[in-house]
Image (cartoon, rainbow, N blue to C red; front, side):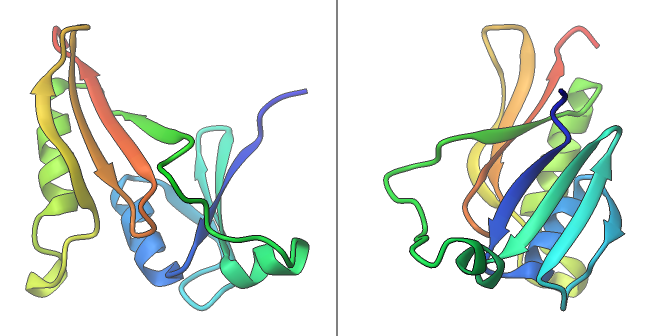
Length: 135
């Protein structure tokens, strides 16, 4: 047995695709008008499903409340890339539009030896950006 995919529920497929594409994930299937979209990241798949897909599986499903239950963490390889990725995600979008991510915690040098930042995707899911400080 192996972990094959992580599924994320989205209320805005086009915005979610823009966000996860900006993190360097490769779109493998689906798209802005699809109810299900897949990205690849090495051997792991990231799945985006609309609320309609989830309600089709579980008609009693509702959005979780009270804070996040998990987050994704992206290794940016070098400390400078944490700041660059954070700026790319939280700065003005294409043609001066809205940012693709929300700011949770601006980049900082964490006591555990990493450059670290936290953003949120369009649905409020937390996404960590990190790299070793000595890289």
